[in-house]
Image (cartoon, rainbow, N blue to C red; front, side, top):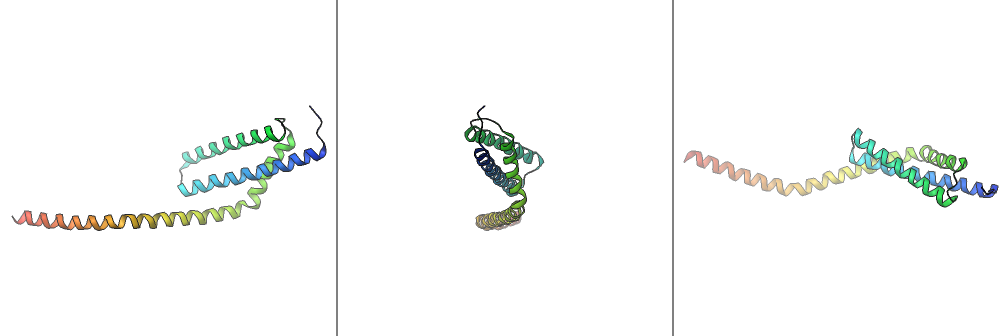
Length: 141
């Protein structure tokens, strides 16, 4: 194995911190999807497995491209550190923002459904009234 200079190791460590940070952002996207879709435990498990597979693939491709496939402890540590930095520095803010986005999306969907369903309710009510009158007329006759 070729010797890597301290400058190159530092560069790789900082790049791996950035990769870990991006994995934290990806985790937040998955969390937002889970919040929007209000998933059950089994679905959450599938989301988590999917995230882990994507994170593993992303880390593999990162190590393959950044360091020609040579796995170094400081790269793995940098990915973990970047993820932890994201999670504890911006994770709380992202959760609050995700809750806000989720609430906005749910209100928008509810409002849209009410607008779409309203004409059908009116039509249903009209047909219901007509059918009631027909039934009353039929009972009299």
